[in-house]
Image 1 (cartoon, helix red, strand yellow):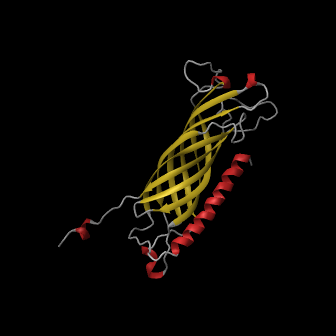
Image 2: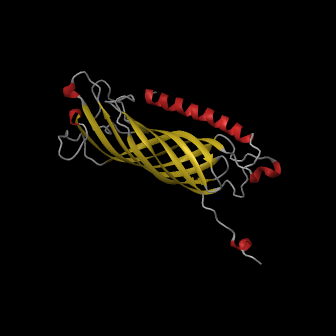
Image 3: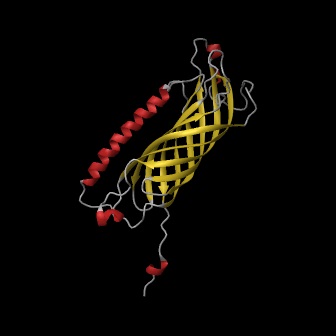
Length: 254
């Protein structure tokens, strides 16, 4: 298990602790969070955040050039605990090699498009009520985990670090393989869902992606360490929208 993954697990643990504290404070409020919507059906999800990579030339935060990430997808709530999601994510990854010799100080940049499907499991029941009030009261904070499988479609470019930002006029190294390329990916992680109202929720989320490729940094397997693969993590804020379907029969005035 690499250092980046330890960092993500540590931060996620802090998020979980905050969620239980926030949930306890919410229960102490005099007003209840009532709702007429069931915890089932389709939810539209969009998000944005930052991404970092763990590769052959960079295995820590210090050498990472944190890049932007964006996502769009849908979640189908099967039960108050279980759901299935499909997502399309874009990430720009980059890092600099840490070596004593400045002449070998390589940098790279990768454009990554990810397609994935996941199982989403709530760690707490979405309902906060009990008995006759269960169907009308929702929990303010719900921690969740998700894991799945998918594919990444990527293009990697490497160049001498002294050039700084990469553009078309600068010197680049020859590609290690033919790009764009595909690779398998296993995303897993979790987050916290904060309920705003029946339609909207906000969810900070941490995900870690294990890939089947060693070329996200445009550098293949190195001598003495041929089995390493490139992995990356994403920290994001997601907005969840649940369409409200009104019953026109009962909404009409008699």
